[in-house]
Image (cartoon, helix red, strand yellow):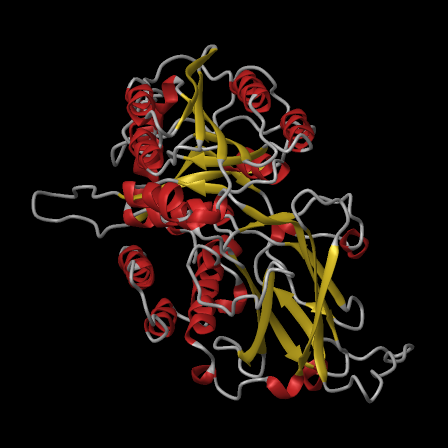
Length: 560
C-alpha cells in the first residue's frame, strides 16, 4: 500500500506546512486522540546506537478541508508522525536453496500486532508498516489443527502444501503446531503479580480504565487456590494489593477499582518490586508470573533497553515469567514490550477494546498462563532437487542462525496449553530456478539428493524443552512433494484462512510479492474459508480487509 502522504496535491501539502508553522503544538494529547487537522508533535529524537533501533509510527486521518461553502476535497489519508515505537525489521526475502538450504527461527504466539492493526483501521487510520508483524496476525486466530495423540510429546506438527494464490507457479508450505490443552480441574494454581502502569499517560479511557475492566474479568475467573497481588508504578512504586487468594474476590475487585493514573513512569523500579513479590511467594507447584500492563512509556529508572532485557532474562531463571499487555496509541513503545516479553519467557498482547480484554484475560487464560513447552525452535531444510528458493512469511524479529537450533542456551519462544503456532513459506519449484537467477558460469550445481530422499520437498525439525528441563527434545517430520494439493480450494479451511491473513499482512506492509493480489481477492479467500466462527473473529477479519480496500479507494479519489 503506498503512502498517501507522498502523493498529496501541492495545495494540500502547502496547507499542512502553513498549519505546522502557525499552529502551536499540543503535547498534552496523544496522537491517537488528536482531532483531525491538529498538528502532530515533532517525532522523538533518534535512539543512540546503544539503544534498540525502532521506527516511529504514524497516524493517518481523513482531512476534510473546505474549499468553499459547497465544495470539499475528497478524503485524503494524511500521514502524521507519532511517538509510537516498533521493531525495525525488513521483510524476509526469497533465499536460494543452493546457497542456504536451512531456515531457522523461534516460534511466536504473540498477538499484539493484529489488535493494534485492527484499532488503527477501525479508526480510519492506516497502520505503519513496522507495526504489522505477519506471524502475530496469523497466530491471533484459533485453529482446529490436529491435536497431539498423547502428552509424551506436548504438541503435534502437521503440514500442508498448496498453490500460492498471488504468484502462479509457486507453492505455499503451511506448518501447523498445536499443543495439548489442560482441563480446568487439572490446571495448577497461579501465583500472579499484576504490575500496572498508573503514570499520567495511562489516564485516557483506552488505557488504565480499559485495563481495569479487563482485570475485573480476570479476578472473576480466579479459583480459591490462585493468588494475585497488584503493584503499581508511576513516579514511585506501591503495593496496591498484597498477595490475596481467589476466595477474597471483593478485596481484589476493590483494589482494582481504586487504581488511578498520575505521575511519571518508574517502570524499571516497578518491575523489580513485582518480581521480588512474586519470588517471595514462589510456589514450585504453581504458575509464577508477572503480568505487566503498560503503554510502554518507560522514562524513569533503567533507560537502556538492553539493561531491562538482561534484568528480565535473569529473572526468568528463577521460574517467574513475564507477560505484557500493551494499551494506547501515540506513545506505545511496542519495540520495548516485544523485547521484554521475549526475554521473560512470556507473551505480548495488545488490548484495544473490552472484547480483546475478555479474549486475552478470559478466554486465553488457559493458554497463556500454563506453559507446556519452552524454547520452541523450528528448522526447515529444503531439498534442492525440489525447491529452488523459499521465503519465510513473517518472523523477521524471531530469526535464528542455523547453529542456534541445537544450542540449548539460546532462548526461543514458549507455548502454552492449547496454543497453536503457524508458519508459512512461499517456495519456488526447482524447475523455475532459471527465472530467479542466471546459472553460474564457473560453478556447478550441488549434487542432487539421494534417490531415497529425492521425493521429499523438505524436512521439518522442532526443538523444545519441557518446563523445568534444560535439555531440549527433538521432533522431526518429512514433507513429500507428492502430498502437495493441486488447487488451493482443496486445502483445509484453517490453512486457507491462515493464508488469507498472511496475504493481508504482507499487503499492509507493502511487500512487492502481493502487488497484484488485491484486498478484494484476500477478502474473498478469507470469506470462503471462515468455517466455524463461533466468536466472529473471522467475520470481523473479512470486514477489516474490505474496510482497508475502501480506505485505499477513498485516498486514491483525491489524488491528482
